[in-house]
Length: 510
Image (cartoon, rainbow, N blue to C red):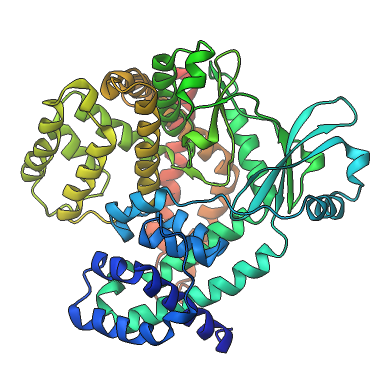
């Protein structure tokens, strides 16, 4: 419903953006013509007294979003993962968006825990602290279980947050529609699709059962990763509005002085955090999408502990192969192969010149390899790469954008621990290991066996399918106008032949 209350929210938002100077920054960033800028200021100025002042110490856009509250803060955080929409400069500003909001009452939190779990807090917890962290969607309490004195973190959604988000999302849709109407040039950025993406992400985060599932899957995937821990969710004490998991005890990865005082090797930590991220992305296709220092600690034994699994990234097996081959091509400075991989994957239209593309990629890679080791940046390389591929007609791929954005964050974490880190040398063993296992003859054999297994599951249905198609073909008039009978018959017969050959090959290869 987009009624008067949404119009009021839109007016208040515009007034806040005008008062904080954010409206100027945004319109300049989108390259709005002067006439549109004048119109926007003219419409917003009479209502500037309705706008929130915000914190003058913050940059304009961050200041406005922080002043407008949780929905806007979360919207800004999600936009920071989409530099393809807001541009690199604004994405960097939004990445540091403040998320430390005033906590809500511990009594309210306890009441929500009791309502969700159906038990009194005193029955479950021997201790339940005041909030130790408060963000836009939820806050965290440290607690101890009655049964075994186990330290746990209890995450509780802000009261009424889902209702508030739904109201603001409705206003965001109105704003996106208005933006498309007043500024047609923004339609290429698909504002309404951006809001739909935001709605999906936020509504997912408002169900803490989904975050518990992400934590559980991530913990299973990384169980054998040396020097890495993921806290274990406590499923029986988790639900839609409450999530309980092991307490992550350690030193923040942002506190170099404390890490040094505890005797931790920051060079090894920097190498490990980068290699772990690449391993999770390539090996598992499931990675932590918000892997900044605030979500990482170092345990007493030197293990890196990750937590807060509200934003996770997922890439399919084929995309992982493509990404690994691209990285490996750059590491080996084989720009022709990098170009070929883009064409083979269909990322770049087939009518473009592969040689010209390879030459453009060389212009991306060579300057970086000419730098000193401590200045080489994989994140910068990926940013340059996306610029080149866009010029050659490559469509935006959202899964790679999140990967790139997280790569920027992880690289920043690694450099904060060791400013002399050689990104390429650290990444090389992870990428080479993946290439050996997943690209080449052995991978081809493994893929063939997997294909055979899939066909074997459908094998019993193929004779009936062939029989039905042959009958339909013989009956003639009852066949649909497109006359798919003959091609489908041959496809089914081919599948039978492939199945027979594949089963034989599978047994032989094993």
